[in-house]
Image 1 (tube, one colour):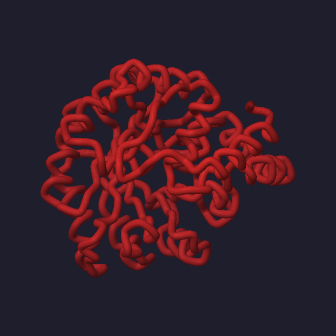
Image 2 (cartoon, rainbow, N blue to C red):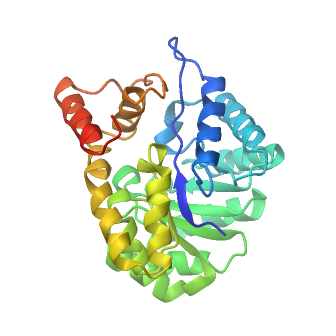
Length: 291
């Protein structure tokens, strides 16, 4: 259902810290022009923990309106309260969102059975195709391949964003599930290796800046142009690494502001980047020919 470069959209803020609605529209148009295959508002990169439910709903409305059917919208509707995740997913469906990105419940630390029931509840009652999001570094729980295999049997669970960083685990998911579930990279520096073990694309931080280059790498791989894909992978590597000099989305928003995209600042507890890391980031952007 999903493939290619899918940017995990940053949430732009005004100088006073409110949702910058016009800038959201600018970013959606940018990604349509650059060939992004879908777009994800209110994910981790979109600072979802500090967005109110009203802001998320408004964000979904703007993105759906501006996308106007040209690219799919995958809304970040997950959380650690299953009932609230179901409710937000239903509201996203009413707005016209195409799918829901549902992060593994954080802090609660559910068992594998709890994770399974959480996702099945959302798949059954939310009314949207579900993209499971496994990111143990942020949630303290790892969705194991056996659990993914069970989830893949449900018709509404269509994909998994895998950010465990464990290629063996990702390979096992493909071995167990085959085409029953689409595997998407959740780690920019592992997108190419993940393609080699069954992945179809990436929900990407770096694609906020260079979606066309990320797409070019993925296209080259699936066209059998492996040397070209590897060359682009190496070209993107410094940029991918720079996006994680500090906690995401601090570097990517800082980079976008350096590039004149004017996406604003952060909401606490996130804050501005340190000056030393800003210099490293700036040097990387210059080296990449972007600044």
